[in-house]
Length: 287
Ligand code: C2E
Ligand code: CA
Ligand code: CA
Image (cartoon, rainbow, N blue to C red; front, top):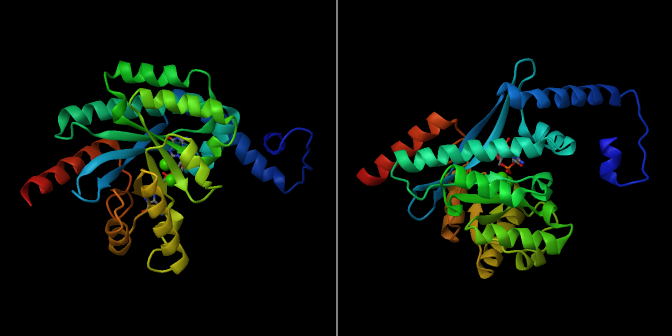
């Protein structure tokens, strides 16, 4: 049903026996997701965002994890789309925001990183929910944090419908001091007009292009073109999925401001991440 709905009205799907297993797995995950929030089975990992010039850690992206008793660790690539279809992503998203901001508050207080910020992935269902502005503003107030501690990552897909309303919402976020970044740039429709029409601050080059740097001439050329274009539009850039020195140097030499990927750090749980910031602080001040 969800698949037909996604394709639009007046469509139907032929149900084949082969689809049975897939459907069962989805129904199982769907049921479990409903209980996972109450049971506390979600947790967050944080992946460092490094300033390529100063090499200091300036923020982190919050990445959700789900550890189910029977299924084990389920990848967000598998469960986030399901939670989005059922609408549960709205509650899950609220939990992510609240949990991540509580940690940012702690890190700002307990480390030297007073401007530390967190990047959160916003799903389209969440974004289109009626209370998104109030929700975010309430959570910021609850943790006594300014909007500048938050960066919202939005994918191109979210921008396609109802442009005036989307622009209105994005402008409200901006007024709150929140930064806006366009995630997975290059994988979707990547229309240049998006970049002009919407008030983005940051562009994230998708890791599928970064992984080709040094190996695939087209990918290197694409990265180069995206960087030049983003900069000429006044956007700051995050290179994500940076795994080695060559990719880092390529991006750094072309003025990419922020680096994220296994080369800097893997996503880590709260306490581990706090230690990581402390160590990087120590290196910064002593080396
Ligand atoms: P994304 O937003 O593009 O997140 C980046 C993904 O790349 C993460 O996968 C991260 O673990 C992975 N990654 C980071 N560095 C490297 C690297 O150097 N190499 C490679 N190959 N991969 C790297 P993850 O954590 O499995 O998340 C997958 C997707 O799930 C995310 O993609 C995002 O779309 C979604 N997601 C994760 N957390 C949330 C959330 O809280 N809310 C929503 N709505 N979606 C989320
Ligand atoms: Ca992201
Ligand atoms: Ca991404």
